[in-house]
Amino acid sequence: MRIPVIIGLVLFSLFLCMYSPCHASRSEIEYLQKMMNSQSSSLGSVLDANWKHLNSKDSFFSSMSIGQKDGSMEADKVDSLPRQPKGLEFNQYAGYVTVDAYSGRALFYYFVESPQDSLRKPLVLWLNGGPGCSSFGVGAMLELGPFRVNSDGETLYANEYAWNKVANIIFLESPAGVGFSYSNSTSDYKSSGDKRTADDTYMFLINWLERFPQYKGRDFYITGESYAGHYVPELADTIITKKKNINHTNINLKGIAIGNGYFDGVLNFKAMIDYIWTHALNSDETHEAILSTCNFTSGNFSEKCYNALISASMEIGNIDGYNIYAPICHVLPKAKNKTTSSMKEIDPCAEFYVIAYLNHPEVQQALHANITGLPYPWTVCRLAI
Ligand SMILES: *[C@@H]1O[C@H](CO)[C@@H](O)[C@H](O)[C@H]1NC(C)=O
Ligand SMILES: *[C@@H]1O[C@H](CO)[C@@H](O)[C@H](O)[C@H]1NC(C)=O
Ligand SMILES: *[C@@H]1O[C@H](CO)[C@@H](O)[C@H](O)[C@H]1NC(C)=O
Ligand SMILES: *[C@@H]1O[C@H](CO)[C@@H](O)[C@H](O)[C@H]1NC(C)=O
Ligand SMILES: *[C@@H]1O[C@H](CO)[C@@H](O)[C@H](O)[C@H]1NC(C)=O
Ligand SMILES: *[C@@H]1O[C@H](CO)[C@@H](O)[C@H](O)[C@H]1NC(C)=O
Image 1 (cartoon, rainbow, N blue to C red):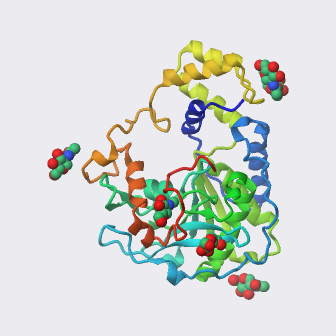
Image 2 (tube, helix red, strand yellow):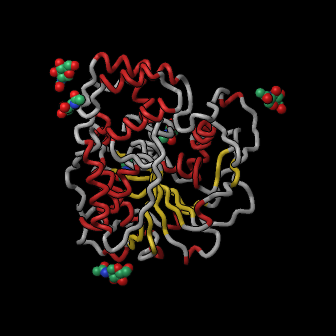
Image 3 (tube, rainbow, N blue to C red):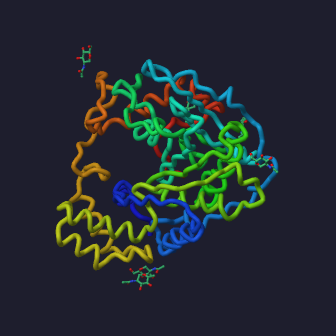
């Protein structure tokens, strides 16, 4: 039985906090293998359906896609984003890198250099999760990028906690179908999965470094959160173990970091159920009913389990699953006048400002995004992926 949408939403919006930074070292391969093995204990779990064993046809080493110079750093330069605050001096770039010329798959990136001494600072790739959520819209515009969007959906303000103060950051919209990233073979969207995501991201890096050769050999870190608990180690593994036939000195992987990582669907779900209960969002009866009737290993939900999950969802009500003590967005975004936002306060509607901003044609033009006229608007996450 498929997880009903309502439960699915609760599930995917309630990732629990597990912060597990780790650094690649001499034993990095073992470490990664261990992490990846820990993920496989949820094999068969419906929660990870389609994402686990996904194998793309190995068009990966098609020479058409490797080292292809299908763009340039100069062409990708963003002079400034529309209505960005004045007085911020750093280079920003955005554009597409083709990762599969045969299918016509291209990934969109936004790259910000450090204002000072960027040549001496490391290169960091940031990945959001989902699967299907945008590293640009969420990672850059709501979390660690240099700018955030004001409540008018038009103007930007500076993020005082921007990571590009200490590193050069690539935000990659991945896999194809997320945000501005696309494939000309729309069947690709139905066959997305971990393996192809790792292969495509690897291909992205190889080709991106041809466009930005000054970053070849630079200290490189892979970072991300949530479902990137899969992407980050899988990409590191791809770089380290699988692709020895490409000049590896280009990608000088030094470490990985994962925040709020999603590794194991079953474990994650159990932890979530307990979290909800221990935070007085579910009754003892409902909690007990879930534990005694649901088998998340098999993913085959009985009628009783289904009913218990519905009760759980109703008892929780409409709250922010990421931050149960925070307010939720009530005001229709359009009805709101501009307020200068503050980093110190949580604005539950912030996501809507980003959606408004990134759907402006002139913003997309400045970003060299959506050059093929994608037949749908930019969204934070695409569940179809
Ligand atoms: C996708 O198709 C469009 C229209 O034919 C073309 O301009 C674009 O370059 C193609 N993208 C890729 C990555 O091949
Ligand atoms: C490998 O990369 C290094 C550093 O960028 C470069 O000097 C060298 O020529 C490359 N070798 C090959 C075979 O491409
Ligand atoms: C849950 O399902 C798995 C796989 O079908 C089965 O091996 C296991 O015994 C079940 N557990 C319970 C408590 O029913
Ligand atoms: C799922 O569980 C039901 C009983 O709740 C059982 O009749 C059915 O055979 C199970 N299906 C699978 C694929 O295990
Ligand atoms: C928004 O601003 C306009 C013009 O300043 C004002 O007339 C209107 O009442 C404001 N709306 C809200 C919801 O504050
Ligand atoms: C791409 O641009 C078209 C207009 O050419 C617009 O209708 C569509 O919403 C845009 N899609 C995305 C993903 O930005």
